[in-house]
Amino acid sequence: MRSSRWVGATAILLVLGCADRGGRPARRYPPIASTPPTLQPTSSAVAPATVPLDLPVASPTTVSFKLGPAIEFRAGAALKPVPIAKQTAIHALSPDAKSWVIDGPNNTALLVSPGLPQPVSQSVWVPSARFSDDGTQVLIWSMSGLAVIEVATGKFLARRDGAICGARFSGPREIVFHEESKEADARFWRWAPGAPQPTALGAARKAETCQAAADGSLWLVESYAERSVIDGRTGGARVIAPPDRGGSLSPGGNRVCTGDDRGLSCLRQPDQRTERVWDKPTSDFIVFDNSGSHAMISYADGADGVRDAFALVSFEAQTVEPLRGVKGTSGSMFALTTGAKLLTIGSGSGLWVYDIERRQKRFAAHRPLYGNHVFPHHPRRVVAGTDEPMDLFLVDVP
Image 1: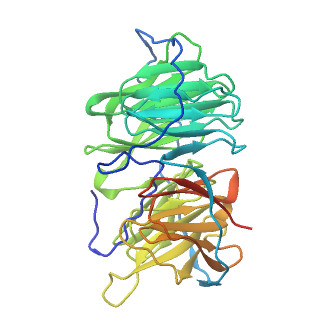
Image 2: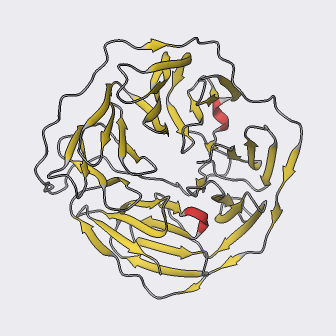
Image 3: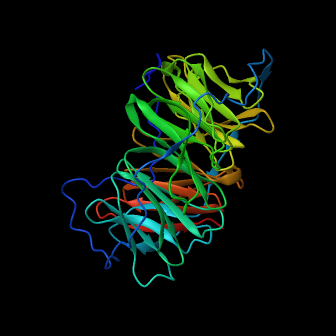
């Protein structure tokens, strides 16, 4: 775990699901469809490992951001959450908000869709999931493997065992994914579902955490040994910094941002220009919106250098605007909707919604939360999961 000299940083968690914990009441689930036969390749094609990373060398040019006016919030009317599911956790929502990937029993994830007679089950361990842009396919991956499922039919289009660090759709009917391993044997792969086997790109490496652009075009892969940027088209890699520097990759894949005692700086891709965003000690937990045009940061603001404060970064305007009155506690879950319309904060006391567009602070739920989710196609919609009992509800912010 990385740390900086200021200790009071709020732990910012982006939770897309939650492993089951002891002491919960038994969950109720609908019947589970039997898994159809799927293709499991016995071998994989390997591309040459010497493909260079198609990025220019670092530029000495530095771009400095400006301090903008503080954003103040006035009290707004309470929001009314709408219950949508009981005793489960959500991992992904389709673009039309009609299909879901949720927790199932016995370490499974369930695809639930109106066109399916019953949910489709995929065995997982700590799952993640993403729908394709057109909503016709869903990609589910975890420490136990990955699967691509056709939403309309529930048919498995591709399936692979093994620990997966990250996965993305990279084009029509194509995925890219990176294996996870503490040994230097993790590979980066491209797979067109329906093809008999995936193709390995680039060299093997250690990979313990992975971040990826939404379209899989750029990856940030870290281990205790190094931190590398990987070109999602070729698999070529470049080591960009020691692993103790931390870093967050924007969803657009166009910058890697790092917060530490010196402030917040970003390495822009592909021109490699440095953006000097902020000069106050900043947490290395950086919350981007889904487009990557904005980010919420937590920084030390006070005479003792440890009091937490928050600010909104606009990468297009190259400004930083302090957020006045925004509060989070240790363990709070932060999310920023597309275009920075809403900032949501979930904690043990409930869900707060900061309407940045309308400058309002609104309360949505009193029940303790375990998850707080926003989705690319719904800039003013929040899906939150409550704890004890573990239920889901929807909040639309008019």
